[in-house]
Amino acid sequence: KNLFDNIVSKSKELMQNLENNVESHEAYSKQYQDVRDWLASERENVNVCDDTTGEKADVVKRSESINTVLARLENGKKKCEALQASIVSLKKSTSKKGISQLEREKNQLEADLDLLIESLSGIQQKLQTTLDHWKKFEDEL
Image 1 (tube, rainbow, N blue to C red):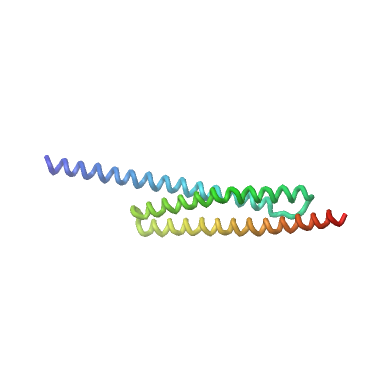
Image 2 (image 1 turned 90 degrees about the vertical axis):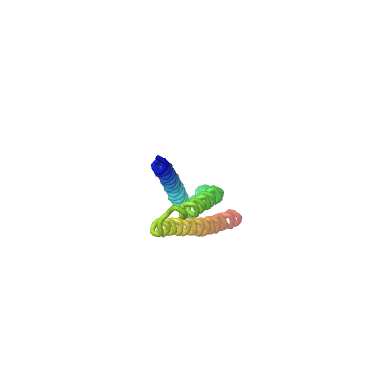
C-alpha cells in the first residue's frame, strides 16, 4: 500500500511538472509570436516612411512617424528582454535540440531588431537631409 501511494504521489508530481513545462513553453511561444508581430508591424511602419519625395508636409509627416516608431522602440526592447528571460528559464527543462532552437529564434529576433534600428537611423537621416534641403530652398525664396 505504501509503495503504491509513493508511486501515485511521484506520478502526480511528474504530471504537475510536465504540465508546468508545457505552460511555460506555450507562454514562450505566445511571447515569441508577440515580438515577431511587433517587429513586422514596426518594419512595415518604417518602410512606409522610406520616401523622401513629395511636399515638405509629406516629408515632415514621415519624419514624425519615424520618431513615433523610435519612441516605441524601448517597449519593443523590453519585450525582447522579457523573451530572453523566458528562454533562460525554459533552458532548464528543454532538450539540447530545443535549446538550440530557442537560441536560433533569439538570435533571429535580435538580428531583426538590429536591422530595424539600422533602418530607422538611415531613414531618419535621409528625411532630415530632405528637410534641410527644403529649409535651404525656403530661405532662398
